Image 1 (cartoon, rainbow over the protein chains, first blue to last red):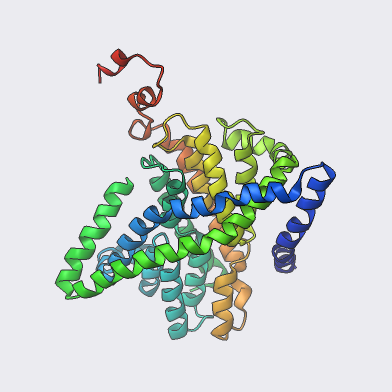
Image 2: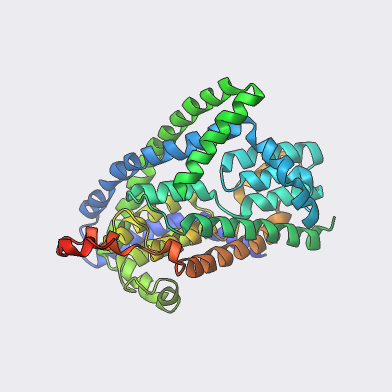
Length: 179
Length: 215
């Protein structure tokens, strides 16, 4: 039921918005077309402005992934994850989550192909994927578009959130799906 | 912070890549991802223009400030520095709503618009404000109501119940969101994350030069 409501809202949100906003604006005597053009002009600038920041962060993450450093990292901290009861196979997906969305999706798909989507590992990595966003991508793009270089506590706070999300995912999957 | 993480990623990649004999892959990845970045940015232009256009219409019609007024009780606590009816607030609400509904095409344009508005209120232009960090936390730790992408993957892999992870995802992402936002509120008070006084002075043209002597 809940699932149906949410997917109904997410399908209709945009068409309704595109319908209602111009109509209400017209009622308020806004010159809708001119106003739209005025706003839309900014699109190009914003997209171009984030390029250097995107290149910097994605190149570093891409190099890191290609070097095989992730596998090394996994061996280092696997004793820790054994301690909290996380299956070793799921660890790369957890570590990849803040770095790369497509990377995590790749790992998750691979694991689900191997263990089956309805295995505990399959359900766990599925939950990992939705539990947080790609923190470094968001930080690079959002701060990049306004030229912020000193990010202060944004990165540690984001990573604390990621960690909390991963731990919560493990906890709730153990309760709901058992292992 | 980003500085050290960036250098760390690159240096580790080069050392480990050399040891693993994958240095060519590392070089290749650098070029490939540089390309991918531009593709992502270029791909944003159209969607960006569309949403910024709609957003401008909504703003001129007074809809954005109406929305901001509606959630004033919550926004006052989360963003005490931002005037409740500032355009930044409206853009932030639209971004968060789009994120929760999984409308990532709309979320990024609204989010970038919100950052531009927040930057107008920023006294130290190269340094993040508390409001920006809190807003980022709401994004990186965004609540996910429908994890559409992963459900799609589960469907292709013949899951018996592809959507069964919706509940666990909502739980985990809500947890992440609460922790990320709480973390910004605590960390912003720590001395190491304070906006340094001299940065405000340098940014402020009217200040006297002797103020800078004592640092």
